[in-house]
Length: 190
Image (cartoon, rainbow, N blue to C red; front, side, top):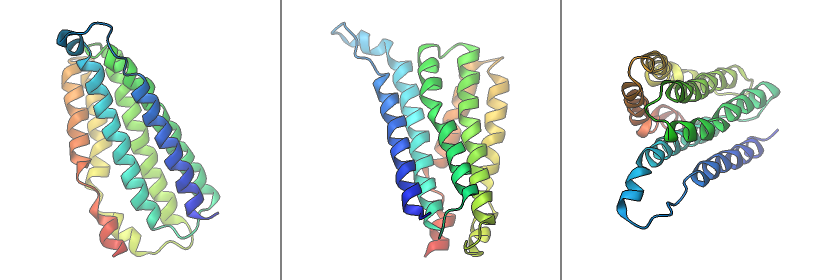
């Protein structure tokens, strides 16, 4: 299979994920500013989740730039990533409506942790695939953010039982770490 077909499918799924999230934003019936203020947690959870999905899309694009040919293992690893990403809208909606509650914050953390783990799996499968340039392994070798992110998610999930706001701050911190695109693959490709 050509990589363009897989990336087009992935782009479509990611676009649908974003669309589902934005459809959860409901306009208030009231017409004053206080009505918008009450929607702040829902809006902030949407912004954070949009940022995460955009980060995955960006890094997915860069990663697949390095792939010459797609095999079955890559297809399944990519599908697994898309599955976990597709659960972000549900976790986002629950978090936005219950941002101070423990279990919505825990579920949101799991919804962030699982795509991080499956993205790492996808990288590993791509590295093992035939036809992949061995320089990619060198480019991905020093993956500090990729190792630290799941650890931060795990800590945040645990802290949600103590203080959900601290967990949410950690989730935002990890997103900020990834705002700067992963330059390792760009250096490899040039």
